[in-house]
Image 1: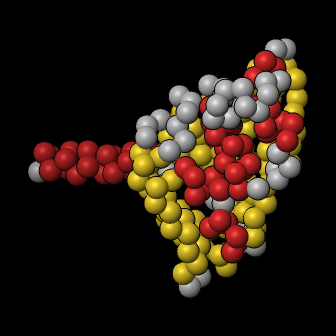
Image 2: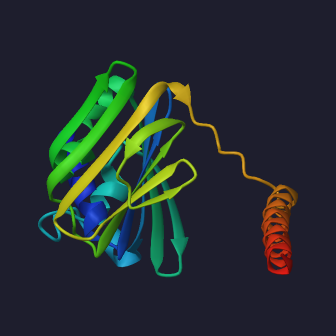
Length: 210
């Protein structure tokens, strides 16, 4: 089974221009999702046709992942999913196959994920790694953050990913100030500035008269 998963991983990264890896962190589970596109020609090749791996192994043989395949012209858009328990994620084949150094720990009230060193799976131009945490993030070094999704773009053969979440505190979206509140604040600042300017001019006028 492990060999099949490695074939799956290699194949996903060998095909298509971009590979997207998504991980959703919940209280007790981590949900792994991989998306991409392959041509119909690639998907119909025999499993030993290209040496290292082919799409045939994923689409026609692999049983570990939940698979969703959709045709689009001459391409097949694929989605593969697998759910881990917190304790099992350290055994993730993708984590163990792609990253040289991996530290996945539960420390007091926190889950800590650190991935660094050589990256062995850069078989496309770039790979987007997005982690969505439904728990509060205590620290991270993401390239981009959108709400509770932390995104790293890997485009070289080394990487450095760090994410620490508070396992006892759920994520809460920050409350954004409405337009009316912002407008009131701006008006207040302008009023203070104008009042201060008027006072300075008044004092200056009185001083010159004396």
